[in-house]
Image 1 (cartoon, rainbow, N blue to C red):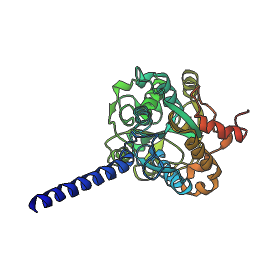
Image 2: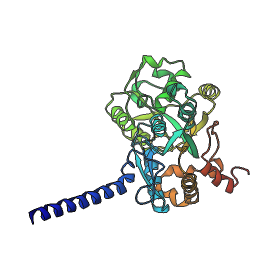
Image 3: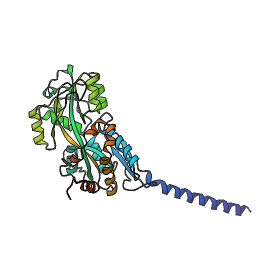
Image 4: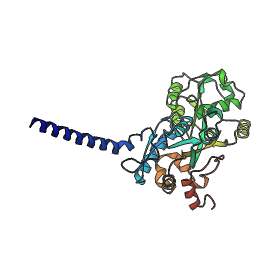
Length: 341
Protein backbone atom coordinates (compact mmCIF):
# COMPACT_ATOMS: atom_id res chain seq x y z
CA UNK A 1 0.00 0.00 0.00
CA UNK A 2 2.78 2.41 0.92
CA UNK A 3 4.54 1.62 -2.37
CA UNK A 4 1.32 2.36 -4.29
CA UNK A 5 0.82 5.70 -2.53
CA UNK A 6 4.40 6.71 -3.19
CA UNK A 7 4.03 5.93 -6.89
CA UNK A 8 0.77 7.89 -7.03
CA UNK A 9 2.38 10.93 -5.38
CA UNK A 10 5.27 10.88 -7.88
CA UNK A 11 2.83 10.73 -10.82
CA UNK A 12 0.78 13.67 -9.48
CA UNK A 13 3.94 15.72 -8.96
CA UNK A 14 5.06 15.05 -12.53
CA UNK A 15 1.69 16.22 -13.91
CA UNK A 16 1.92 19.42 -11.84
CA UNK A 17 5.42 20.18 -13.13
CA UNK A 18 4.31 19.67 -16.74
CA UNK A 19 1.41 22.07 -16.18
CA UNK A 20 3.69 24.76 -14.72
CA UNK A 21 6.12 24.41 -17.63
CA UNK A 22 3.35 24.88 -20.20
CA UNK A 23 2.01 27.98 -18.44
CA UNK A 24 5.47 29.57 -18.29
CA UNK A 25 6.13 29.01 -21.99
CA UNK A 26 2.80 30.43 -23.02
CA UNK A 27 3.32 33.75 -21.21
CA UNK A 28 6.95 34.36 -22.11
CA UNK A 29 6.34 36.38 -25.28
CA UNK A 30 5.05 39.36 -23.29
CA UNK A 31 7.94 39.46 -20.85
CA UNK A 32 10.25 41.52 -23.07
CA UNK A 33 7.79 44.29 -23.89
CA UNK A 34 9.29 46.77 -21.43
CA UNK A 35 12.74 46.71 -23.03
CA UNK A 36 11.46 46.19 -26.53
CA UNK A 37 14.08 43.52 -27.30
CA UNK A 38 11.37 41.04 -28.30
CA UNK A 39 10.00 43.40 -30.95
CA UNK A 40 8.47 41.74 -33.97
CA UNK A 41 6.92 38.95 -31.92
CA UNK A 42 3.42 39.15 -30.54
CA UNK A 43 2.61 38.19 -27.00
CA UNK A 44 -0.23 36.07 -25.68
CA UNK A 45 -2.65 38.87 -26.60
CA UNK A 46 -1.49 38.83 -30.23
CA UNK A 47 -0.55 42.52 -30.00
CA UNK A 48 2.65 44.06 -31.31
CA UNK A 49 4.52 45.69 -28.37
CA UNK A 50 5.86 49.20 -28.93
CA UNK A 51 8.17 51.10 -26.62
CA UNK A 52 8.13 54.77 -27.65
CA UNK A 53 11.35 56.69 -26.85
CA UNK A 54 10.56 60.37 -26.22
CA UNK A 55 12.66 63.03 -24.42
CA UNK A 56 13.00 64.91 -21.14
CA UNK A 57 9.82 65.46 -19.15
CA UNK A 58 9.57 69.22 -19.77
CA UNK A 59 10.23 69.05 -23.50
CA UNK A 60 7.69 68.46 -26.29
CA UNK A 61 8.67 64.89 -27.16
CA UNK A 62 7.66 63.48 -23.78
CA UNK A 63 3.95 64.48 -23.81
CA UNK A 64 3.67 63.62 -27.51
CA UNK A 65 4.93 60.10 -26.88
CA UNK A 66 2.35 59.59 -24.14
CA UNK A 67 -0.44 61.08 -26.31
CA UNK A 68 0.43 58.91 -29.33
CA UNK A 69 0.79 55.75 -27.24
CA UNK A 70 -2.59 56.24 -25.56
CA UNK A 71 -4.20 57.05 -28.91
CA UNK A 72 -2.83 53.94 -30.63
CA UNK A 73 -3.88 51.74 -27.71
CA UNK A 74 -7.45 53.01 -28.07
CA UNK A 75 -7.61 52.91 -31.87
CA UNK A 76 -5.60 49.83 -32.86
CA UNK A 77 -6.45 46.30 -31.76
CA UNK A 78 -3.08 44.92 -32.88
CA UNK A 79 -0.84 47.33 -30.92
CA UNK A 80 0.17 47.70 -27.28
CA UNK A 81 2.18 50.92 -26.87
CA UNK A 82 3.89 52.62 -23.95
CA UNK A 83 6.29 55.58 -23.75
CA UNK A 84 9.31 56.46 -21.66
CA UNK A 85 11.33 59.58 -20.89
CA UNK A 86 14.86 59.70 -22.35
CA UNK A 87 17.76 62.15 -22.68
CA UNK A 88 16.51 63.00 -26.18
CA UNK A 89 17.07 62.18 -29.81
CA UNK A 90 20.62 60.78 -29.68
CA UNK A 91 19.65 58.29 -27.00
CA UNK A 92 16.40 57.57 -28.86
CA UNK A 93 18.30 56.43 -31.95
CA UNK A 94 20.63 54.28 -29.86
CA UNK A 95 17.52 52.64 -28.39
CA UNK A 96 16.23 52.04 -31.94
CA UNK A 97 19.60 50.56 -32.98
CA UNK A 98 19.68 48.23 -29.97
CA UNK A 99 16.05 47.13 -30.24
CA UNK A 100 15.14 48.78 -26.94
CA UNK A 101 12.53 51.01 -28.63
CA UNK A 102 10.39 50.44 -31.71
CA UNK A 103 9.24 54.07 -32.21
CA UNK A 104 10.98 57.36 -31.42
CA UNK A 105 11.11 61.08 -32.15
CA UNK A 106 14.19 62.80 -33.56
CA UNK A 107 15.08 65.97 -35.47
CA UNK A 108 16.46 65.73 -39.01
CA UNK A 109 20.06 66.53 -38.14
CA UNK A 110 20.37 63.79 -35.54
CA UNK A 111 18.55 61.34 -37.80
CA UNK A 112 20.91 62.11 -40.71
CA UNK A 113 24.02 61.76 -38.55
CA UNK A 114 22.75 58.56 -36.94
CA UNK A 115 21.86 56.87 -40.21
CA UNK A 116 25.16 57.88 -41.84
CA UNK A 117 27.37 57.27 -38.78
CA UNK A 118 28.57 60.86 -38.44
CA UNK A 119 29.39 63.20 -35.50
CA UNK A 120 28.38 61.51 -32.22
CA UNK A 121 27.45 58.36 -34.18
CA UNK A 122 30.91 57.94 -35.71
CA UNK A 123 31.51 54.19 -35.95
CA UNK A 124 28.01 53.50 -34.63
CA UNK A 125 25.60 53.80 -37.58
CA UNK A 126 21.89 53.42 -36.93
CA UNK A 127 21.04 51.66 -40.20
CA UNK A 128 17.84 50.02 -38.95
CA UNK A 129 15.86 53.28 -38.61
CA UNK A 130 12.99 54.13 -40.96
CA UNK A 131 10.80 57.24 -41.30
CA UNK A 132 7.10 57.12 -40.44
CA UNK A 133 6.22 60.84 -40.60
CA UNK A 134 7.56 64.38 -40.43
CA UNK A 135 5.57 66.26 -37.80
CA UNK A 136 6.62 69.83 -36.85
CA UNK A 137 9.67 72.10 -36.51
CA UNK A 138 12.02 71.59 -33.55
CA UNK A 139 13.05 75.13 -32.60
CA UNK A 140 16.19 76.36 -30.85
CA UNK A 141 15.32 78.49 -27.81
CA UNK A 142 18.35 80.18 -26.23
CA UNK A 143 17.11 81.62 -22.94
CA UNK A 144 19.28 84.00 -20.87
CA UNK A 145 18.63 85.59 -17.50
CA UNK A 146 18.02 89.29 -17.98
CA UNK A 147 20.43 90.17 -15.16
CA UNK A 148 23.30 88.01 -16.54
CA UNK A 149 24.68 90.70 -18.86
CA UNK A 150 23.80 88.76 -22.02
CA UNK A 151 22.24 90.74 -24.87
CA UNK A 152 23.31 88.62 -27.84
CA UNK A 153 24.53 85.06 -28.41
CA UNK A 154 28.07 86.45 -28.72
CA UNK A 155 27.85 87.52 -25.06
CA UNK A 156 27.65 83.86 -23.94
CA UNK A 157 31.46 83.64 -24.12
CA UNK A 158 32.81 82.56 -20.73
CA UNK A 159 29.34 82.37 -19.12
CA UNK A 160 27.64 79.57 -17.19
CA UNK A 161 25.42 77.61 -19.56
CA UNK A 162 23.15 74.58 -19.71
CA UNK A 163 23.74 73.19 -23.22
CA UNK A 164 21.49 70.17 -22.67
CA UNK A 165 22.13 66.60 -21.62
CA UNK A 166 25.53 65.20 -22.60
CA UNK A 167 25.59 64.10 -26.23
CA UNK A 168 22.02 65.21 -26.88
CA UNK A 169 20.84 67.02 -30.03
CA UNK A 170 20.30 70.03 -27.77
CA UNK A 171 23.97 70.08 -26.80
CA UNK A 172 24.99 69.76 -30.45
CA UNK A 173 22.75 72.70 -31.39
CA UNK A 174 24.27 74.78 -28.57
CA UNK A 175 27.74 74.09 -29.96
CA UNK A 176 26.62 75.13 -33.45
CA UNK A 177 24.96 78.32 -32.23
CA UNK A 178 28.18 79.38 -30.51
CA UNK A 179 30.20 78.29 -33.55
CA UNK A 180 28.18 80.71 -35.70
CA UNK A 181 29.38 83.54 -33.42
CA UNK A 182 32.98 82.31 -33.02
CA UNK A 183 32.35 81.72 -29.31
CA UNK A 184 34.61 79.08 -27.71
CA UNK A 185 32.25 76.38 -26.43
CA UNK A 186 35.00 74.84 -24.30
CA UNK A 187 35.50 78.21 -22.60
CA UNK A 188 32.00 78.19 -21.12
CA UNK A 189 31.11 76.71 -17.72
CA UNK A 190 28.64 73.90 -18.39
CA UNK A 191 25.97 71.95 -16.50
CA UNK A 192 24.80 68.96 -18.56
CA UNK A 193 21.23 68.51 -17.37
CA UNK A 194 17.73 68.24 -18.79
CA UNK A 195 15.15 70.98 -19.21
CA UNK A 196 13.61 70.56 -15.74
CA UNK A 197 16.95 70.92 -13.97
CA UNK A 198 17.91 73.78 -16.31
CA UNK A 199 14.79 75.69 -15.24
CA UNK A 200 15.72 75.24 -11.57
CA UNK A 201 19.28 76.44 -12.21
CA UNK A 202 17.95 79.53 -13.99
CA UNK A 203 15.55 80.32 -11.13
CA UNK A 204 18.32 79.94 -8.56
CA UNK A 205 20.76 82.08 -10.61
CA UNK A 206 23.16 79.14 -10.83
CA UNK A 207 23.42 79.42 -14.60
CA UNK A 208 23.22 82.30 -17.04
CA UNK A 209 21.76 80.75 -20.19
CA UNK A 210 20.08 77.53 -21.28
CA UNK A 211 19.29 75.96 -24.63
CA UNK A 212 15.89 74.34 -25.06
CA UNK A 213 15.33 72.54 -28.35
CA UNK A 214 11.62 71.82 -28.69
CA UNK A 215 8.40 72.73 -30.44
CA UNK A 216 6.69 76.08 -29.85
CA UNK A 217 5.36 76.42 -27.21
CA UNK A 218 7.21 74.24 -24.71
CA UNK A 219 6.76 74.26 -20.94
CA UNK A 220 10.44 74.68 -19.99
CA UNK A 221 10.69 77.98 -21.91
CA UNK A 222 7.35 79.11 -20.54
CA UNK A 223 8.64 78.59 -16.99
CA UNK A 224 12.03 80.21 -17.64
CA UNK A 225 10.45 83.37 -19.04
CA UNK A 226 7.72 83.54 -16.41
CA UNK A 227 9.59 82.53 -13.25
CA UNK A 228 13.34 82.88 -13.88
CA UNK A 229 13.51 86.41 -15.37
CA UNK A 230 14.43 84.87 -18.71
CA UNK A 231 14.57 86.35 -22.21
CA UNK A 232 14.89 84.71 -25.63
CA UNK A 233 18.10 85.54 -27.49
CA UNK A 234 17.65 86.12 -31.24
CA UNK A 235 19.94 84.70 -33.91
CA UNK A 236 21.34 87.23 -36.38
CA UNK A 237 20.54 86.85 -40.08
CA UNK A 238 24.25 86.19 -40.70
CA UNK A 239 24.28 83.37 -38.14
CA UNK A 240 21.16 81.81 -39.67
CA UNK A 241 22.71 81.95 -43.16
CA UNK A 242 25.92 80.35 -41.86
CA UNK A 243 24.05 77.48 -40.18
CA UNK A 244 21.80 76.85 -43.19
CA UNK A 245 24.81 76.61 -45.48
CA UNK A 246 26.91 74.35 -43.24
CA UNK A 247 24.03 72.18 -41.96
CA UNK A 248 21.56 71.91 -44.88
CA UNK A 249 18.67 70.54 -42.77
CA UNK A 250 18.60 73.81 -40.80
CA UNK A 251 15.56 76.05 -41.42
CA UNK A 252 15.06 79.70 -40.54
CA UNK A 253 12.29 80.04 -37.94
CA UNK A 254 10.65 83.05 -36.31
CA UNK A 255 9.20 82.57 -32.83
CA UNK A 256 6.19 84.84 -33.16
CA UNK A 257 5.60 87.59 -30.57
CA UNK A 258 3.57 86.42 -27.57
CA UNK A 259 4.25 82.76 -28.23
CA UNK A 260 5.37 82.94 -24.59
CA UNK A 261 4.54 85.19 -21.66
CA UNK A 262 6.98 88.12 -21.48
CA UNK A 263 7.93 87.76 -25.15
CA UNK A 264 6.48 90.90 -26.79
CA UNK A 265 8.51 90.76 -30.03
CA UNK A 266 9.32 88.27 -32.79
CA UNK A 267 12.54 86.32 -32.17
CA UNK A 268 14.60 85.00 -35.08
CA UNK A 269 15.87 81.46 -34.55
CA UNK A 270 16.56 78.21 -36.41
CA UNK A 271 14.75 74.89 -36.50
CA UNK A 272 14.74 71.48 -38.12
CA UNK A 273 11.92 69.09 -38.88
CA UNK A 274 10.97 66.46 -36.31
CA UNK A 275 10.44 62.92 -37.50
CA UNK A 276 8.49 60.02 -36.08
CA UNK A 277 10.68 57.00 -36.81
CA UNK A 278 10.49 53.23 -36.35
CA UNK A 279 12.70 50.17 -36.52
CA UNK A 280 13.17 48.66 -39.99
CA UNK A 281 11.90 45.28 -38.76
CA UNK A 282 8.50 46.64 -37.69
CA UNK A 283 5.86 44.69 -39.67
CA UNK A 284 4.58 46.65 -42.66
CA UNK A 285 0.97 46.34 -41.54
CA UNK A 286 1.80 47.80 -38.11
CA UNK A 287 3.68 50.77 -39.59
CA UNK A 288 0.79 51.33 -42.00
CA UNK A 289 -1.79 51.37 -39.19
CA UNK A 290 0.30 53.68 -36.99
CA UNK A 291 0.63 56.26 -39.75
CA UNK A 292 -2.93 55.91 -41.05
CA UNK A 293 -4.49 56.30 -37.58
CA UNK A 294 -2.25 59.29 -36.78
CA UNK A 295 -3.14 61.31 -39.87
CA UNK A 296 -6.80 60.28 -40.04
CA UNK A 297 -7.23 61.01 -36.32
CA UNK A 298 -5.47 64.38 -36.44
CA UNK A 299 -8.53 66.47 -35.57
CA UNK A 300 -9.17 64.32 -32.53
CA UNK A 301 -5.54 64.67 -31.43
CA UNK A 302 -5.30 68.46 -31.82
CA UNK A 303 -6.80 69.25 -28.42
CA UNK A 304 -4.13 67.15 -26.69
CA UNK A 305 -1.13 69.47 -27.28
CA UNK A 306 -0.69 72.87 -28.93
CA UNK A 307 2.12 71.72 -31.23
CA UNK A 308 -0.15 69.17 -32.96
CA UNK A 309 -1.87 72.10 -34.73
CA UNK A 310 1.37 72.40 -36.76
CA UNK A 311 1.16 68.84 -38.16
CA UNK A 312 0.55 68.84 -41.92
CA UNK A 313 0.35 65.64 -43.98
CA UNK A 314 1.42 67.58 -47.08
CA UNK A 315 4.78 68.19 -45.33
CA UNK A 316 5.09 64.72 -43.82
CA UNK A 317 7.98 63.71 -46.08
CA UNK A 318 9.79 67.04 -46.41
CA UNK A 319 13.47 67.14 -45.50
CA UNK A 320 13.98 63.37 -45.19
CA UNK A 321 17.66 63.85 -46.18
CA UNK A 322 17.86 60.47 -47.90
CA UNK A 323 16.67 58.42 -44.92
CA UNK A 324 14.46 55.50 -46.08
CA UNK A 325 10.71 55.59 -45.49
CA UNK A 326 9.21 52.50 -43.86
CA UNK A 327 7.41 50.42 -46.54
CA UNK A 328 4.23 50.37 -44.45
CA UNK A 329 4.22 54.16 -44.21
CA UNK A 330 5.13 54.43 -47.89
CA UNK A 331 2.02 52.42 -48.79
CA UNK A 332 -0.19 54.90 -46.90
CA UNK A 333 1.43 57.98 -48.48
CA UNK A 334 0.97 56.48 -51.94
CA UNK A 335 -2.73 55.95 -51.20
CA UNK A 336 -3.01 59.61 -50.17
CA UNK A 337 -1.07 60.90 -53.17
CA UNK A 338 1.79 62.30 -51.05
CA UNK A 339 4.08 59.88 -52.88
CA UNK A 340 3.23 59.70 -56.55
CA UNK A 341 2.77 56.10 -57.71
